[in-house]
Image 1 (spheres, rainbow, N blue to C red):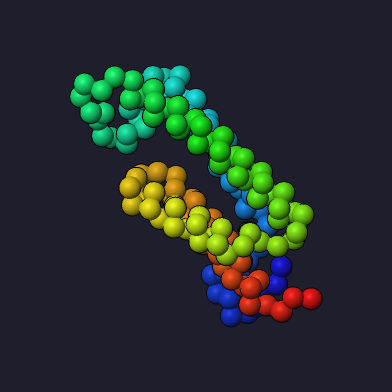
Image 2: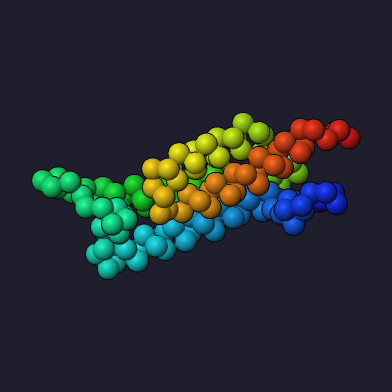
Length: 140
């Protein structure tokens, strides 16, 4: 956890990559709690963020809710594997993984600006910074 004097903004967040797997698991738990609240109140239309489901399409609200719930489980599993890999190796995920997280989150932010993918974008940038920093530093 070394942060050079000239790191600017990255100095305080230099070690966040070590907790990125756990952060993704916490985000997924929040995702599931939000889904449970939406399901319990019957406000499935919240998933469309102000848009209406197409007329004449039955079951779209329930399908969106199912995918919302399943994606939370998937994010938790990815976070658990990330946490295990980081703890086992002591290294951040490889740059290709970080680039994938950044690109995926950026595309999803463009498609759904009022979503939690902003957190994924921030996490991906922290991972990318850590991965590129590791790639440049000499290995012992």
